[in-house]
Image (spheres, rainbow, N blue to C red):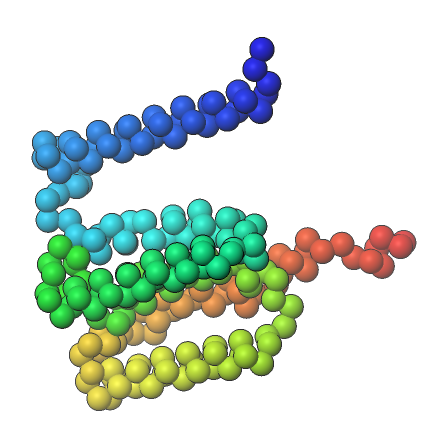
Length: 205
């Protein structure tokens, strides 16, 4: 008789296989058979898929990153660096060669921030969770990033830098972009850590 662990593993594998088969059928129906109810069309781009998957991937990666990031060997670090470099190269080529299938041409800096800021913050939750106080290097990086964003924002509003996509943005647009990413590491995670940490005085009492 199979052990409970083996039964759970088998059930998980069956569930994953069923989800993969269902996704394959829906994609085939949307792209090849033109099932309109799927919402998938031949003109979908890589950008559309990034909008769909960036946050779910970040949520899935966060616990794995928390458990294994300190144990990554040189080979795996180089593999991750290579994947990131390949994506950057694809973005540059997508703009330079006007590769329409990527969906990158026409998107400006503001669009990239909307796409990546929240998923990046979620993926970095393990780092925020362990951060008791800002180290000088971390504080310097954050300050440099904030200063660069301020310069670019001013350039967008006052210098009419169209590539920023900031022209016409209101306070609401900025809150929508940065409210959750700022609240998560600055308020929510510290509050959760304080609440979950045992109180020594209460334990002694």
